[in-house]
Image (cartoon, rainbow, N blue to C red; front, top):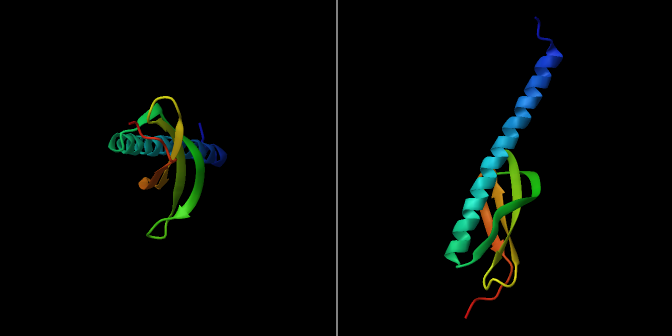
Length: 107
């Protein structure tokens, strides 16, 4: 059995896609952990225990390398009766920022 060049290229493409998907899951978990810590620190309740990808681009990091820039959205509440949105931004696997909408605090 011989492996043709097209088979090798196809196998490389599939392996690359699987690697990028797996790496994306690891970055998403890092974003979720950062949001959980943020909500705990500000006494907010993270809703759905989830972050959802809202933006993906390539940008340069501090060293000039092209890395994925990801923006995730999450929802939280303070009083339990209204949902607010926030976002977390990661450059590569490094946390860039976490922001949230203006919200009410419990009395």
